[in-house]
Image 1 (cartoon, rainbow, N blue to C red):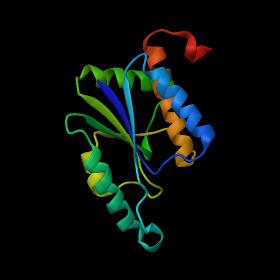
Image 2: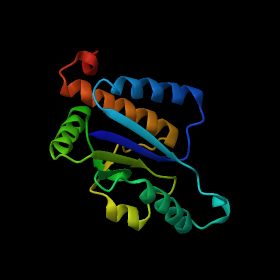
Image 3: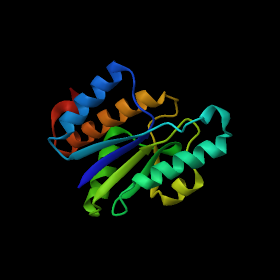
Length: 157
């Protein structure tokens, strides 16, 4: 079992990267974790929004593990608290997919093809965060979920 985080664009702020790396390293105690960074679409500033979503969608779909499940991080997704999110992870892991793949898309969301491939959508908050912050927050929440599942004190520390 592996958890994959697929992102459009790279993290370029060192403080976000440090936090991502710290929580990614901690996750290794519980599960295999992989972060896949896709490049930003070239010449996006001169493209209409739908074309950008289509190009990003092609990149995302090309990196999916067909034996895994796909969950999108989307502003219109279902919100969970940390305990509920840990239960979602347990439920999905118990179903036995090779991987659970979470995707953070670009600024305009996902193409229809990516939405069609997804099992579900989750939202981290009703607030909007920049994509670099979302990556860091999400990885921390996956780590938190595993500490909850293992009855460890991190969640209440």
